[in-house]
Length: 327
Ligand SMILES: [Zn+2]
Image (cartoon, rainbow, N blue to C red; front, side, top):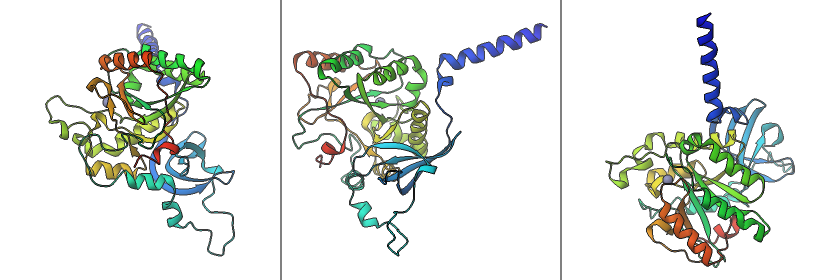
């Protein structure tokens, strides 16, 4: 009898644990999550590139990029075609030149070539008068509560703007797993159309060691597991019903040539920053602002909020319109 009691208590603790970290709320279970590169058409004959494939309870799925808008979406394999519909007697194969000429492929090529630099490689500023700034908020692993004031201040701007405020959140999986309630709060703000969130991949574990030189630290130190760091974060976002984007922020903004090339092979674009507030870098038109929403850099958040009080910053979405003018 006593043993049964312990058994029941054990189960209660186990399930309570599952619910307390929110994992049991996952929308679906994904297996065999893999990188791929397959040109496809969707049901409405829109051209897309499948960059991931995975199994779900309801069959095979693709994560696709529209190479003209850079938007991602998931499609069940049953809803895609692998060839065009025009009977051209050549089997309706694709021309690679046409693919390579799309904005997505051009950006990928642009942002994966030399000169490489250890720090802050990638998109740092849209220079061609975009008329606003990009706000990117990093969620590195943290034991602190998140910056609720920052997020709710941004969300409160939606009423005046009469539209959700576009923000990009660089999400590490280890933050997400440890802060389920705060993550759910962000999703609620998104669902209620106060925030329009672009999820930037910020790696799974966001490795960092106090005793390793900076340029050899972060993902450079963990390079062996780079693909896993990228793919498992996307998988987790998808399981939470979220849409991973084609953007990646290197932890610590530290990378090297090898990682940049491997990021390109995964179909992703590195997002740097030219206005890291905690480092006293102030934004200009088209800037990529970097602040931390994980409670680890309150100085940057305070500075951002005081500027927000003074100036009406216009926030831009990470989309093709401005990104195509970056370089
Ligand atoms: Zn980080």
